[in-house]
Length: 279
Image (cartoon, rainbow, N blue to C red; front, side):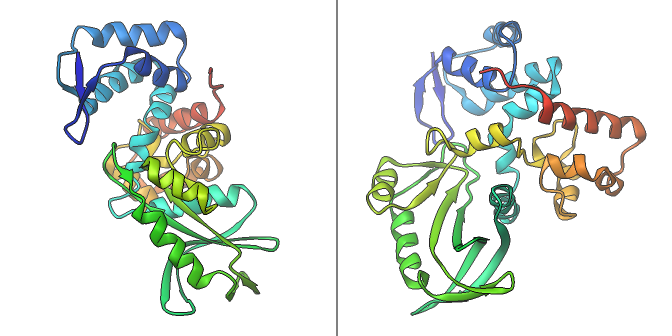
């Protein structure tokens, strides 16, 4: 049986890959087998990856919302669009969790031209320029032209002094971050020129999906108990992380939600952050 990717490419169906992604959600072996058996009879040659995902997600959600929320991470990142504004805010939160002060959407003057920097991060003697490349396509890949372009921008600002967070510092380094994948040429170019690259599945041990699972920095869009309008409302009111909701439950005051719905939302949020992930 073959599966059709978002790009239209047909690839062989790999049941082990599906099982692995379900295990990553924290589901037990019996839960994973339940999901697989439930959707197996509905599979057909040429099924889209999107339809396959939705079937697995719906089945998993019936068993445990927190597992489904974790399974939905990649899709949840895409919901930080459509232009990626909230993705930039979320990346700022990722660096802030590592002890950086961060700010987003800054314009600075380079040696030759002005640059719009998505995220500025500072810690100690470090001042980082972070460029975010947001993609809505689940199969999107960042071609080598993007890190090449980023390297030229970095050369124009690196070593220049700027004032952020109350002190004057030089830009010491940069990061290119994406919720998509990187082509092999992008990885090779980045490695050769020692660029800091962060993507959905790269670097293997410190990729976005690994960092999020390790630190619990799930975007609010992960929660299955929230409707699309609920997510948009919370993002608009600066509730970017599930952690934000746990720390400030009053964010729910912005929603049209009764006490029962609030209880379900907070329960799922708590389970998502505190349920151990079985590898």
